[in-house]
Image (cartoon, rainbow, N blue to C red; front, top):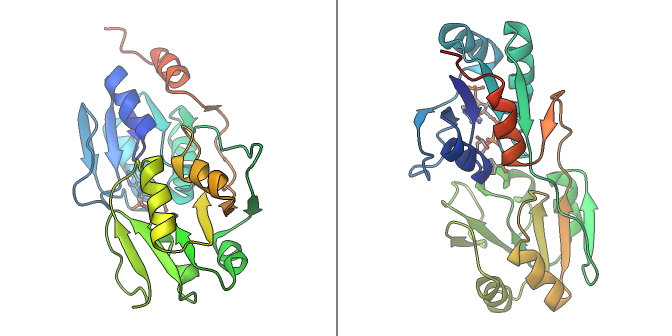
Length: 234
Ligand code: NAP
């Protein structure tokens, strides 16, 4: 069995192309489930993951979690090394600023909150990343589910991506957005970045945490090829 640490479109696509067991954190109530076998919930830290790997003996692990799921990725590096299971990191390339973009790259969510200043901001960093922004009052938060404990002044736009360019333009206009905050999630060209370019809006881009794994690929196809080495010979 090959274990895929999931929660991304890439993980779902890999599961569609190779027989794997996908692991999901279980944060979203109605997740878009991948095909094939699925397990849900944390492993219980590095020691829990080590125990899980020893019990289930996967031939290899593909860490296809989101670029900002830094804790899970760090645990995977440590646990796979301890148990001697080959590990691949599948991570899509980050976004690159193009002509007409007005981006400010920042190293952290805290730095992003500081960079917003006194402006009305569209926050697209996800409901689990709201903490550093709680001191801001003019926030339009886009999330799949409304987080607890956000200020009353915040507007929540609920929904699941992808958002179309029309959605982005109309949300920016409707709420008088003056800046946009995004993680450098990467992947296909994002309509929110296109909308910001069209309107001359500043985009505050939070840089990714560093990759810790030794073997890294950026495409599902490269990950699929890597897994072929670990196919069951029988
Ligand atoms: P994280 O901070 O790196 O991980 C926190 C803990 O959640 C981990 O220590 C682990 O718990 C559990 N966990 C995370 N991913 C898991 C997985 N695939 N299978 C089993 N347990 C998992 O992760 P996160 O940023 O909260 O992200 C959670 C999930 O959402 C990830 O699978 C990620 O791919 C997906 N996601 C994240 C983002 C984002 O911006 N961070 C965006 C889109 C999707 P234990 O220590 O108990 O094992």
